[in-house]
Structure formats: C-alpha cells, structure tokens
Amino acid sequence: MSSRRVLVFPSAAELGPALARLVTARADQACGSARGRFSMGVSGGSLVGMLSKELTALPNLDCSRWVVGFCDERVVPFSDPESTYGLYKDQLLSKVNIPESGVLAINPTLPVQECAEDYARKLSESFPGEAIPVFDLLLLGMGPDGHTCSLFPDHPLLEESQKTVAPISDSPKPPPQRVTLTLPVVNAARCVAFVSTGGSKASVLKRVLEGGEGPLLPAARVTPSKGELLWLLDEPAAAALTLQVERPASGAHL
Image (cartoon, rainbow, N blue to C red; front, side, top):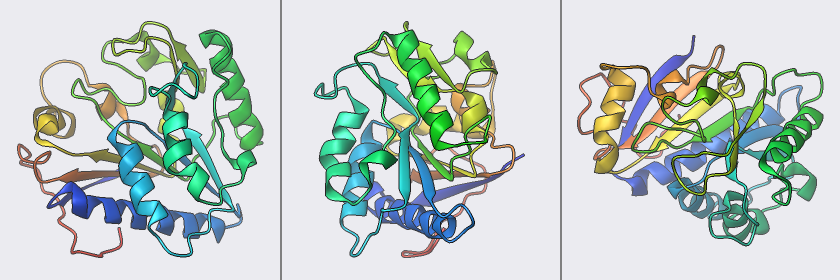
C-alpha cells in the first residue's frame, strides 16, 4: 500500500516550482540508479502549461536520458488543439533535449482499438522484461467528476486488469475516442503525483481524500502498490479538507 502525502501550497504559482523540483529530483535518482534512465508519464489539462513553464526555466536541465509517455491521449491529429502530445511538443518537448526515441506517443491515424494495442506495444518495447511497465513518475490530474487519465466514474475500464493500455470510444468528456493507461499500470509506478488547483476541485478532493458515500471515484483508486503517492494542491483546492496536510516551506525538496 502506498504512503500518501498531501502537500498544500499557497497558490499555483508556488506549486509549479515545487513540481519541477519533484521531477528533477526523481530524474536524478532514477538516472543514478542501475536503470540509468528516468521514465515519466504526463497528463494533459493545466498540467501541460505548468510543467512546461517550470522545466524550461531550469538552467542546465539535461533530459537526454528521459523517457516520456502519456497517461492518456485523445485520438486526434497531433495538430489538433485537443492533442496532449501536440501541446507538449510545442511547449516542452521541442525546447529540451529529450531524444525523439524517448518520447512514447500514440499513432493517431489508427482506429482507437488498434491505437491502444500499438501504444501498449510501444510501452512493452520501452520497458523490456516488465509485464506491467513501471514508470519512475506519473503526473496525474483530476477532473471535477473525480476522473483521472481517461478513467471515468462507473466506467467498465476501471475493472480492466489484463491490458496495460485500453481504448475508450465513449468518453463522457469530448473528444470521445481516447487511449488510457489502466489502473494496474498507474498503481505499479514508483511515484504517482496528482496536481490539482483551484476552488472548483475542493468538494471532489474532499470526497477522494477523505471518503464519502457511494463507490470510490477513479482518482481514489490510485493507490500505488509499492510506490509513493503525492497530492500537490493549492489552498483553494484544499479548502474543504479536514485531514492533516503538509505545507512545505518555499524551496523545500519533496
């Protein structure tokens, strides 16, 4: 069972640099290990801008031994503004020295089922010898309905236990066709960090972190079996919480 830490920052402006410190610390740790590389899965939404801004501002950032995948992706052309890869390509990947071979992107020209199978094959090739890919760090967001990746409340994909990547053709949030990592992959990661900001998330965060009536929301089902679980929040997002939280000092390492 994961050890969960809930870290609260005064605002998103203070949270961003802390996120960058988390990424670089985990990258240094992974690259210095026997693995000799750092594997990270990223998510879309507001995380794209925050992560890209903070990482590109770091002097002497070396990403030459990074492997970056996507926790979920919309099956749309990379030029479409809904493409998570397209956003990261413009804002981050084109500005740092991650090798092209280290970016694991979908093939959006394939039908959604084949797209998911193709992406699962890419993960398998990038994580040889691992039946379930073990990422060093997964960065996740959470929607106002409690979804994470493209795993939505009450959806059958929440029970998927065999596939590492699953297709979804009926996403309740457009666009409808997506591919997503499954919970077994998410929960196999060495570290999972949720990033959630803004007062609109306060009520769902309370339900996810403190419990409530009804079935567990998807984000509450993220419980890494051997890894760390971090929730990085700003004060507005954490406003309804009554559980004990950490408030790191400015510049603190996580």
